[in-house]
Image (cartoon, rainbow, N blue to C red; front, side, top):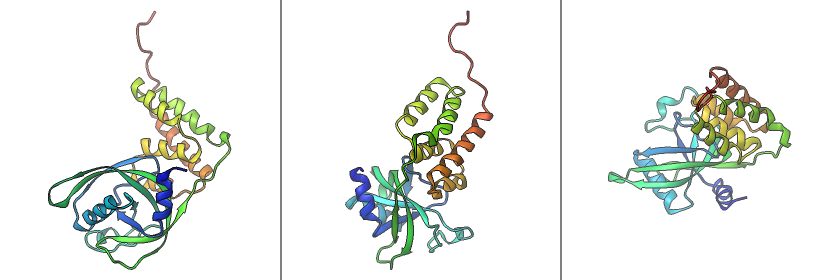
Length: 220
């Protein structure tokens, strides 16, 4: 367990949340964000002066119209992220990079004492699964590497070789699943085996639309 995870475990007692339907952060992925609303400028400022953490949240269906200045109901599952880069801009705005750390489930919203919203949440650990649980996903990754340009394939192989189980599913999903609804399905799936299955099926669908890479170099 890393020091960042320890901070995230402590943060769930009073967790800052940033509702943004267009961005679904997954553990292990990075999201560049431009922070311009006054309440979220205050949130980032406080995070930078504190533990460096806040969570990305999704709003419940039908609540999107309340995003501008309102209090839309939030989906229970969020992703806690840590600010790894921050560029202060004019008028208190920021460009930040938020890297996902772990899932958390909102228990209840706390009384508002800041311009932004805060919740008490439950930190969610991934279950450790048997090594063979992600074999099909690794095979799908190998199939993909054989179909994309060599530099891309090398980067994919390098990143995916470092993780396993639920973390592997998260990394693959964050790389190849761009639709927010699909990504949120992955985020809210706490059953690691089921998450791996969801991501494997999606990756195989991507692979099925790609032709094998042509051999490189001179042909005999």
